[in-house]
Image 1: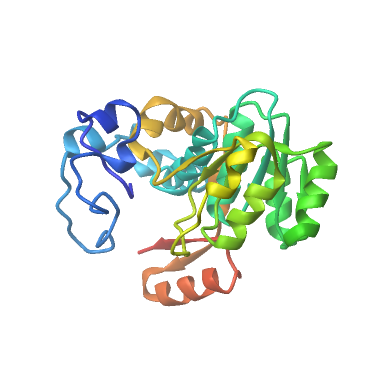
Image 2 (image 1 turned 60 degrees about the vertical axis):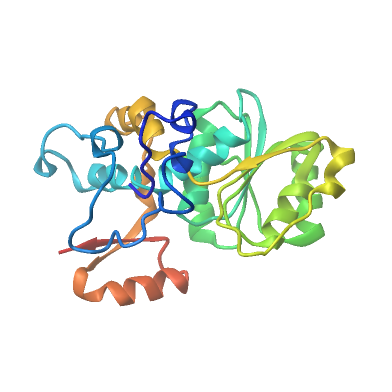
Length: 262
C-alpha cells in the first residue's frame, strides 16, 4: 500500500494513517516501492493480509484487490473527507482511476446523485456503470453552471481527484453555500488562498489516504463480497519489460490504469 501508518499514534487512532505522526514529512508515501526489496516499518499493523493464495482468485478479483493498495482507498478518502452522507448530491472532478473509485465511494456512502466531470466517453461509461447518475464534459464556468442546473442548485460535496488549480476552482464553483470539498489530488499548484471562501461557509478537507484503516475496516470485505468492483480501472495489462510503455499510455490517456505482470 502506498501509505502505511504505525497504528498507535494520535493520527492513526483517529483514522488518518495516511499522515501518521511517526512518519516525518512525506516518508509515509511509497517512494522507492518499485524496488525489489524495501524495508517496511510498522508492518505488524500496516500490512493487510488477503485470505488464501493468488491462485484462489479470478483475474477480475485480483485487479480489484490490487486497487486496495492505492486508488480505491484514495477515492474513498475523498468521500470521507467531504463527509458524503446518504442523500447527498456529489460532484466528482477527475475521471482517472481515483475519480472512478471516488464515484464508487460516493455510492457506497449513499449519495443520491453523483455527477462526474469528464471529457472522455470510455471513462464516462465506466463511471456510469459504477453509480454515477450524470456526466458533465464542459469545464470552467460553463461546466459549473451545467452541474448546478443538473442538481437543481449547488452540490453538497465535491470530490477533487486531479490536483490542479483549475480542478479546485471547479470544486469551489459547484458547491452550494455550506458545501464540502474532499480533495485527494496531489496539488500541482503552489498555493490556493481560501480566504475568498469565507462568505460561503465551505468545509475543505483532504490529503493522503488512510489505506490501512479503510482496507481493514470495510474495503477488503466489500471487494471480497463482490459489493464493489474497482478493478475495472485496470483497462490494459503489460509485461514488466513494457512498463515504460504502460506509463506513456496512462499519460496519453490510452489506458486508465495499467496492470503490470512478470
